Length: 294
Ligand code: NAD
Image (tube, rainbow, N blue to C red):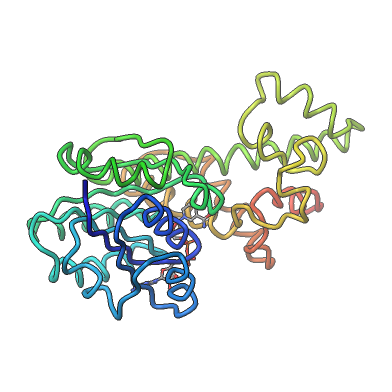
């Protein structure tokens, strides 16, 4: 079992993930640029140090959970110059596939093993230790990392080689963005046709329209009491993060030559919704934007 862990990026997701590693009995050294995040991590038993290099120099496994590709590349350049050869580096951030592959190259040049392991499950899943990890990297790296990931998640899927975890993540979230837009449009149409929310839910959630966006995360208040629609569309999963993931899938589709017209349309809807100042709303709040006549 790995004994010395380092965790860089102790924000909304990384903070609770690092706390679960401490609870599992690992010694965790952590670093974040934000003093508030460092304070919260210290309260959860993480040994916060002065910089990323201090955190990683004795670690056998390093986890990063950062905002975007440029942050991951910058931190991985710093830490690959400081870690011991053979260290396993795991990036759990949601980033573009190209940066993920570049990070694997940095690790290889430093004789380290590496995984891209983005997550689904949100801050609730991070706190409860029930995240799903989508993992890309060599079999040897996966074999070493799996036990650590299991302490932060309940489903760990090895999707393939370098970058495959990020590829799975953006494909999954493109489905989510498209299905949510479709479910919102169906409720708006149902309203115009005089159909109650409950009636449409009772039919669609048990028929061929069923999907996570309606069954678990229904965008109107009432049918699913735990969905953000019942809580003023407080996230949950913010529209700005959905937009980020849809843009990543569009970038990847452009580079790979895939036709993803529905994904492009969903990205455009979330762009316009966010531009009106709703980036901080839950992404199911798109229904309020779709109700407006344009
Ligand atoms: P966050 O902004 O709360 O946390 C990111 C942290 O990284 C911040 O605390 C920031 O200070 C720190 N940071 C940035 N640059 C740094 C550096 N050079 N060195 C050290 N620390 C640095 O974001 P989050 O919600 O925790 O999301 C992290 C990643 O997880 C993102 O890629 C996001 O897309 C992904 N994600 C988020 C959710 C969610 O629901 N929040 C769900 C799934 C995936």
